[in-house]
Length: 173
Image (spheres, rainbow, N blue to C red):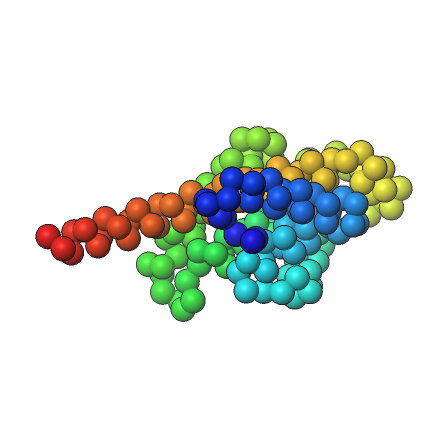
């Protein structure tokens, strides 16, 4: 299962580890690790998720911009909570989920910028990139982001279910 499962207390840990492994031991980028871990639960196969997220690596194509963990998490939140048609009212929940994730990520890590999070001075330098991978920092950010994403999706699902219950109860009165 790759989306929040409130009935399985180990689901979060499994997802966090799977994302970390994909981005660490398996050599994937931060964005690919998040997308390949969470997108299959949203109906997108891992190969498509890999292609979708690959351009987000290194801060959206290696300029050191927004971290791939963050950009891929935003894609997943959109898949999970976003509208299936261009209806502005249906975007509210998705925007709340994105803001909640961003707030928590920044609170935990101080930034969403790849260059600041990684400490790389030159994101195009293969030696710096290799040293960064050996440091374990990308895997650490991937695991942290995967956990935050899981928590946000679970909280948004719980809020949605509570709103549905409340509306159902109100309609019976």
